[in-house]
Length: 192
Image (tube, rainbow, N blue to C red):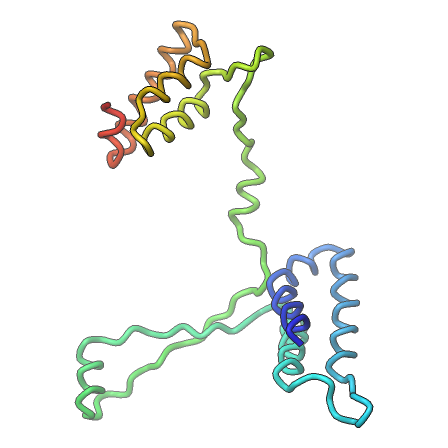
């Protein structure tokens, strides 16, 4: 039973995304048919093979798909201080609104994933000699290591591994100064 419950949770989380493609829709159709069969499966003695909880979980998933993955979500409203005091004292006050419902799409891929795909990944450039290039990502990485353990010797060693030219050194130092102004909470580390 726990495996069916896990499948229902997984399909609830990814069902909308699967239904967006024809191949995914075919998969969802086959999953739906199998889950329907499982929910109606009987044992040899005529009793249901699965508990009501599992059968309802399957039915909820199928209903969610029929509703185009639109799911009602209960949002509780915050109470005022006076409403809480009124409830605690047992005085009936004005009727308290318990909350409201909103709808959301279950299983929809978060928007930030598409944004991350659109961005070009930053890679640390390594020349043919195996030495890292003193680019922005490398400088940021070695500085973050330094900010964590305050080990100036390892920062200097990592800086020297890049064997930077004078222009690379100047560019990297400008980056460090700019980051120091941008990130106030780490300004002490940048100042060191």
